[in-house]
Length: 214
Image (tube, rainbow, N blue to C red):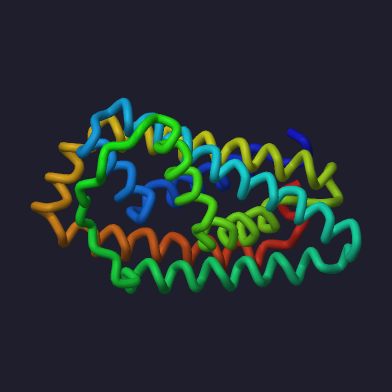
């Protein structure tokens, strides 16, 4: 499909699920908003987050296309830089980066404010942009089809995967918050598991020749 094999799409979907399943600021915001203002507010916030992620994904898709058209040999450099970032992400995930799962009460606001706050929360997160820029080059193959179309397909998969995870978060926000509060060790175990997975993914992608999956 557009130069992306079934294996590539499956691996990218798995990586997207790993990212979406990692507790972080977006998790805290959605759960806190849902606990404070109800599921309706949580769902509105979810749409705002999805819009912010979509903007990051589209910018990454067009940016990667522009760079590769201007400097074709930059592909390998971007690919290796992306793999290096994934290794750093693995390290940061294992360390925990000081993250503590503690939902906070938020002041109730109107629907349009919910959308705006969630959108801004997603847009201003630099880790999201860097993740997109590091992950896309690992799966895009300029020799197999249009880079822009491949990137937009990956973007659609990533945003859809994140949206499904966010829907689940909002739906079970109360139960999830209580579960985390009783099991702080689970967060550390999850960090080790996801960190190891990110590390393996980074090494495998960095060592895989560009055309090996075609």
